[in-house]
Length: 300
Image (spheres, rainbow, N blue to C red):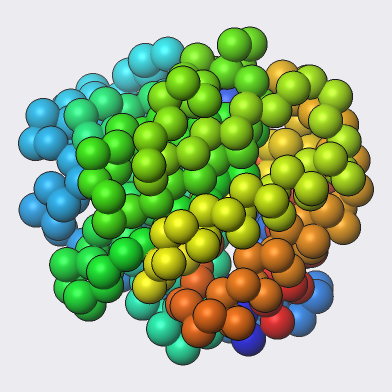
């Protein structure tokens, strides 16, 4: 079974012609409903104090202030409800994490989160949805070790920063070489005993991507021995996102996302580990819905 966490409030974060726009979720929801997904779970309501699990008060204050001013800074668009919606996205991730104790759950929320660190925002992200959910599960549910696997095109520099000195969370990220890709971090030289960055060269195709993913995922899962598995699901590795975020990989088969999901789900089921995922990147509206659906099919 697959549980979906979603709220129409996520469509209220208006960004205009920005790549991270409400049409992403509209396209996915429309496609999933046509494929039989009709039941959607509401996000949990969380407080500003809850955000302190992974974020500094300074960041919380900054996001709140900039939302009130409704200004844009770099890659991030702020409007009057940005703080509220970004906070709700964290609540959606936590709801998915809680549901994963019974079935695989997917947080279909925006804005994304993996570029938000303990005291910084950026890259379309304001608060770190997956980091918040993992830490909340550790604190509230007594989860010991957790593993986050991130297959977005970009390194989740925020997630890496939050857990870099925390051995209870293993972070694995496969991403396009940061030498020519945002955020300019995620090199192998940054790795430690519980952080593994796998930079990918331009031109990596479906077969090579899956080979590298399976190899690194299996090795890291074996090292981490997690009690909870969390997935930052970024669909911008797909070649059709080249014109939007500069994808230079040659991942062109929608079935590749089903294969990624099967690698993850097979290991999770075999080891009895709860698993959930959150939406990160993926901006081409034509390919995104099918790719998300193929990923979710692996968990049904």
